[in-house]
Length: 141
Image (cartoon, rainbow, N blue to C red; front, top):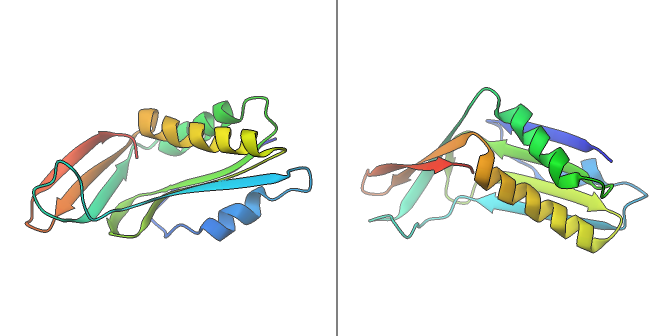
C-alpha cells in the first residue's frame, strides 16, 4: 500500500484531511499523530512563544522515502506533512495518519514515521522565547 500524501508546507495542517486520504475498505485500523508547538522547553530560560521551521529543498523527497520505509511490507497507507515557517504555540507542526489492516501495524508504522522524522528529516527549528532569546534545535521536527 502506498504513501498517499507527503508535504512540506507553509500552510496549516489538517488532521481530518490526512485521515480521509488514508481511509480504505481494506484497512481495519487508523491511527494518527499530531506534533504541536508547546509553550515550554527544558532548556529555555523563559516561555516558548514560537518555533520557526526551515527545510532543505530535498526534505519532501526524504519524507516520502522514510514513510515508504516505515510502511515496509505491512500494506499500510500513510499521509504525512510537516509545516515550515513561523508557528505559534498550539499550531500543528507535524501530522501523520496511518491506516492498516490491524491496529498493531497502524501504531507501529505511525511511530516509525515520527521517529524517523526526528532522526533524519532535514528540517530545522529555531525556538523563540518570550524574552527574545532564540536557539536552533538541530536536525528533525
